[in-house]
Length: 193
Image (cartoon, rainbow, N blue to C red; front, side, top):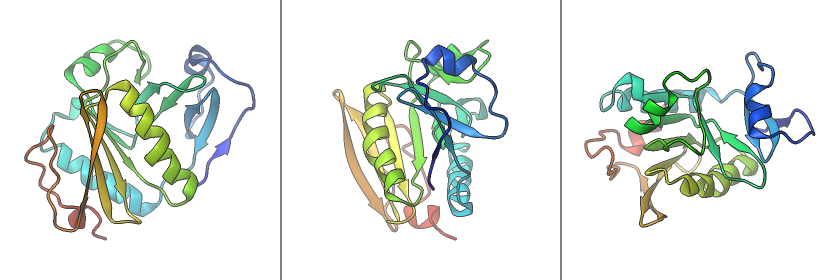
């Protein structure tokens, strides 16, 4: 998946949050630039839905986000990410109560879990493995899962003493999630077509 940069003017977070509705286009704010995110592949959507249905076995629907909640992250300029999936902490969900937009700003508590399904291409790999890894770590998100269909692996990054410690799972290995100790899907089941 490649991205298209819409304007060249740098936006502040406030300008981004109050700007005109983008309609059906899904955009992220990357270092002050609104960046359109093209539709996901059918395979990535299926993987994200499989994970969503499994997460719904462990959390209330109200605590789940599916490509619909933004997270303000640190960058050179204002930045917001829209993860494929997230699980709210009780505090992050409560902080959104009564807001007009599902955006977790830096003054709000972070979600408990963020999941990104890696799209093809080096730009997307860098975004998920490098930039979002650093951005989500800086927010102190308890777990960040990088779900990689190309490598058929899941990198589970767990927040430990101020840093992410990463473990890679493939095939029939069971994910060792501190947040979801009874997570039942293996990578092989997640990537099944």
